[in-house]
Length: 223
Image 1 (cartoon, rainbow, N blue to C red):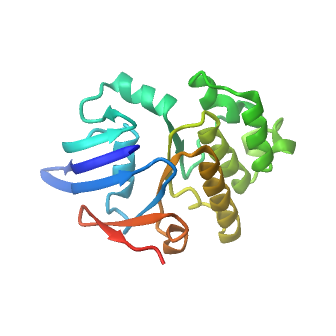
Image 2: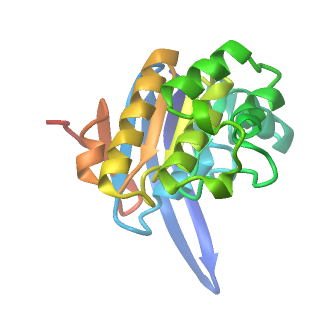
């Protein structure tokens, strides 16, 4: 299992009030499996994704990501996991404006010490970015930038891909195309995919989906 969560809780304080966002979350994700995480706005979806990414720590419970116990890991260990084993796809793209597209695609892989020119070239071809490699992010459309963000996340061949509303800023047609590319590339690399989405239509395209409500996960069958 790439991801094992058991009894995970997370509470935030707002003034004098304690708000429990996650209340005993249990979750597993295997290599090669895709899982959609749905729920109302503010239900804690992004909080759970941040815990899995090591951007925050659970209050209680067990959370193991690719063999790393996130509740006990140091900041350096969490950073190493994000660098070496996890690919992150953000809604806001987070491309580096001073780097051209080729350098943006290679950035994560170079940090991880696993840059592979042949794989980078294959990704650019699959993602339809071959003619855009010498351009800069500001010269690309939103859909093109999101494809770069997906390519960057997969360039280091991560074992786990975390995507937070990866098509949230795109129109439906572009979003569907980006989603198809993401699922195709994850399948090719054998990575696990955990995707936060508010769209039941997109969630139904993944292997499994779970719904977060009142801090707890509910299993949902995929039609």
